[in-house]
Image (tube, rainbow, N blue to C red; front, side, top):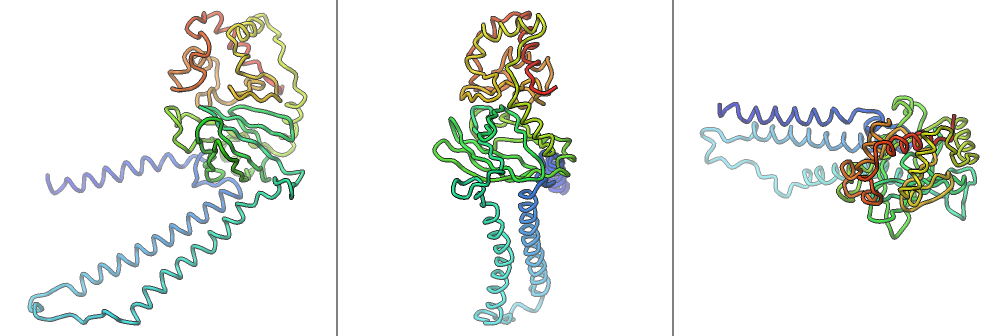
Length: 356
């Protein structure tokens, strides 16, 4: 049994790693399936550096095994002193030059890519490109705000962007450090409270189609008890559809309920002072809670649940149970809300839409 124990441990470890890596293959969240210019560049660097490291490991392993086998001590060799290579000019040149060459092979494309990815000149005042799309991202406990300053549009929890062109981001945090990350589209960038970070991403149409039209975004910085639940979604659209969405958002009017139940829901929305934190106008920025102007068109509830009435009611009924530490908890009397009021509020929220 003891002889099998190391093999069993190795097999268990291998099975666990295979299971974990199996979860990295979804195109809407996998860094191994790049979907855009930035992701492609970073993926190529990752492959190059991994190949160099594997090559070094293989060569060193072969030399190690060769040395063990070739120069092992045999019977009768106890008094023989092997040839001493200390001070060999030839060997010292070999193991000095080879690592330098490997570092050069790795450093040149890394430095080149770093400068390319740091080019945010189209969003700078001095070199501003008026056609460049800029999105101001604000990270909050535990939700995301996306503000399109040139378009006069604000969304919460869901980012809408055009495909096959660069989108420039300004990143800030309102409370603690977070990190903006869309794994399939590019590496993470921190959002800080005391300075603005800038970078760009590009969402290609082919990758978007593979992802089913929706990418998953994450917070990549430990920010509190619901850090792992601080998700958002990204909807890349062809330019024509994106322009239509922009037009609909800019021309949207505040929703007027058309059914009795939705009218009751609007009253509940005001009665419980939801309007005190949430904006329902497509252009209004609220630092307190996500903008709900197009809530009925979202793909998820609270960034993590499937979008349906049942999950919406669960979230309103007890947000603390699903996102511990969120600022919505105890901001209203959710325990005192009746089932009839909850039904009406859900009906009102699900009809907050700007597109047909």
